[in-house]
Image 1 (tube, rainbow, N blue to C red):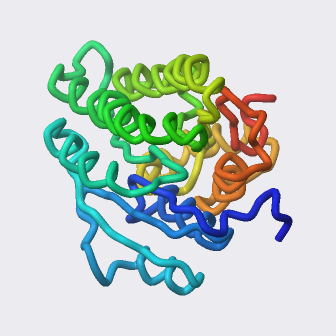
Image 2 (image 1 turned 180 degrees about the vertical axis):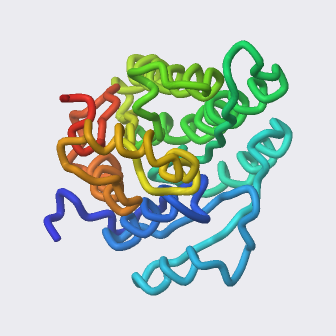
Length: 252
């Protein structure tokens, strides 16, 4: 592997690592040479599938469970992780709640915004301080196509993911001069649990596929290369972007 993309000797925290896109990003980072600290709401400390995949790639794995809907739990996680030298933080933990905006319960709005936006700022703020002190670090958020578009029946998710794109720019403006790169990845329509309802709706799935120039739903593994790029030296002059990995959806 080109040294530009090598992550040998680095440690990456990946939230939402138990399955889906987070799992795929953690594996891709491990295959590029990073040791992984995985975090998810229900991640077992030992014996998980993600631990097995990371160790099969020859890297070490450490697992933590954290309920990102609980700000106290996020603070407790940050207190543990801040004692480690973290090179890359991948903020991928997320949730989605679907209902028409006119009937969308406020408690669901609050939960989605807390998990997808507020908790991510909490954790980033804590782990960025030592990165800023060292003069280097990589922070990667998982944004969404709904960072660019409005979506249907997901007002809280759209607001949170639009906020992630704005937060990426805001943090980059402050931290790029100090050697900390802040960027985001916007996955397109990826075949994960979050899109199961869409894929199960034959009409909606057909309309989505007709708009994707690549002609298929994305796989979680399609996001791995973008994560490695944004975690590596190859992206040292990339700051404040939200990078779509969407099969060409936004270009249509």
